Image (cartoon, rainbow, N blue to C red):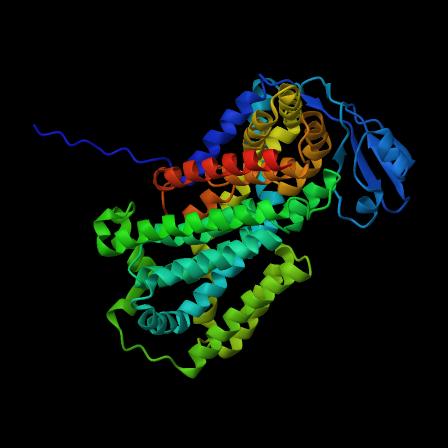
Length: 509
């Protein structure tokens, strides 16, 4: 009797997040709970509120003298103008606190409640994703996307590599300047068909888009949510150390583009070499549909106008995020407005229009849920008060090291902290008042601490299940194991680049 062996598949994105959540929850039983005292600016009273580890508060004058008293080397104006808007940790104020009592029932409750709370706290992003899916469903129903893709594919012949260069570079520019990240979810349904028509696979599309944003934000130069706020929290100007950051961006993006092109061209010349070859047929059916069988698709004026309205939504989104400080509520409003405009110009009719919107939203429902679940990991850490304990441990371990070893170890520290604390601005304000003064002890520029923070928490973003990568992979049903297999060599190369540049920064400081 012949036995057939079942091939074990890697867990889905949902399962990976739940596994990480369980592991982090287990850590909360072994890592002591503790907190730093924090300083927060109250703009109504023009005072600082000091909150100690036991949540007792007191008010003090919002002056530079108060900041000096607590050894926080940040200009008071940075609090008043809103640059530093999160509570700043007070150096040498860490205290262990009593671990919240849970027991078996409490642990199970926290496990379940954190997931619901994560979805609740991510509702603005989730709504944006669902509305975006609905809009894409409408545009697809008009045939505008298919017709536009066919015209574009004709112009791409012989120039496929430039698709990777242009997409990765433009997104990386957005990442380094204004922190373009979650917003790139909107680009996947649009760009994936273009990559497939160019002869590439869905992994190439994810690599170009996700690595563009991940490496771009990691190599932040003027990103207000990381470099600027971290520099201010470190007590330096964000332009300090800028030449090294520019070198990092150029080198890292150059390496990333060459790495992606090498893989993509191998796939184009030999589709069997694709890491996702087993799903190639289903991917083409899902993202290209019938347009492959109908190369003479007419591109009507109504379809062109629908695509123009759709594209203008992205133009407004990018302008709003970069210039007006919009977040996902405002972005969702933009695409909801696009939906209403398409209702009049698409020519679909009421029933088909609504059905197309609902179907499109349903296609991205799984992506939206993953965003909420990923947030639950951070909630467990916050409620267990172990983030400050981890940071306090590393800040003590670093002291007394050789300056090059120190900055390398600092990079490692931020890799670990970045895994647990996904908010770049939150990590900056929490850690910089504590970590930046350590640079003075070993005699190096504080700007290098900002670089170690940027590059460490950015690097772990390439593979951290708690970040954006699982969301991106879920759009195209690519397993996390396949992504790890693809990105490992690039990860090692970028680590070597970072260590070399940090050592060079120490020698030049």
